Image (tube, rainbow, N blue to C red; front, side, top):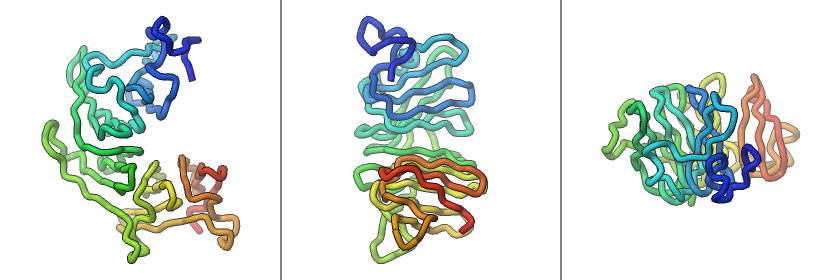
Length: 238
């Protein structure tokens, strides 16, 4: 995609994203749209009438050229940025005219969610599983405490697949997890383990058509699941 008629060429960079390949979008609490591309992080101030394809002031050097796969904002207005090969970063807007970007975790980050209890859920690509970091305990510049979860073939209540793609927190504050080969996982603070739903013709209509999940959407009692096989609707109460 391009913005404002720009094609991403050097001549049009003032009004274009850093790359025409956009991985993810995130609207923050200040109505700024953050754009993760294969070549860095961009932003669009919705108060403007055109796209400003620029790196945030003070942030360009560390994020330039990074393949940004996931972005989310926590309740303290910190922006968390996951990259395909360069790990997790946090953007701290604690200065009026600039910002700080700090590395947090190494590895591949394919999905992010800051939940209602201020935990950061990290989908670790390259079969690294799931990481959960309590954000209330995070101190900038220090090694964070992270709980890691991975598939255990001997435990049916473990994570179904070690490549996590996306997350959704529903209206009940339960967490749904999309994976590359393990379908959809569900967990809640009431049960504290994982339930999985995989493609299965025997399950009838309330199932998914493919185990590679790309996106999740909450709609009251239903969960919409976008997979490589199409769009499916699951009844969360069944």
